[in-house]
Length: 161
Image 1: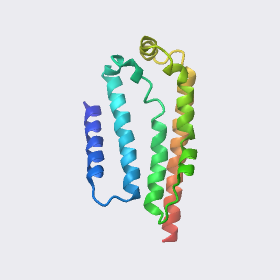
Image 2: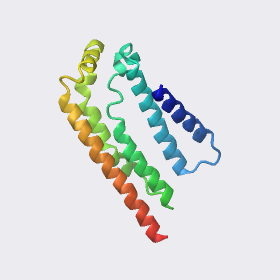
Image 3: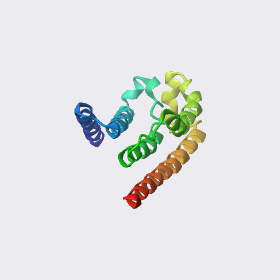
Image 4: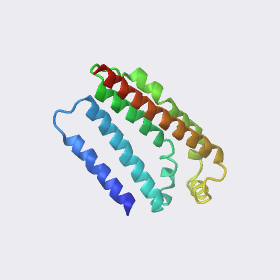
């Protein structure tokens, strides 16, 4: 029930920002971030309710998504505190490399048949423990690093004021 409530709140926030008039760059970054949250929560809820077992090719789609939260927090922080547009496509792609690496590492799982994916999920990831280890290390390290980078940027801005 709590998952459904969280999904509803996230979707509501997404719609509120989407219909906001006179959006600025930070609003667009926040809109993307909340869209990622909605997608992530929806996929998690489908897995929790075992709906994704009816659509097994959706299993594993959410695996690399959490790494985006730290990146989007950092981009949102930069957009809020900086006057000039410093976020470029080139910089964005560099920050997304860990996300794409996790997708590439998950290709062996994505290539499994639907029944094989269900079996892996029911056996708590047996055969893919290496991926879970890499994924957990990436989430913790990048989440911490981007949170720390956001705090540093805020402190820099505070000192300049």
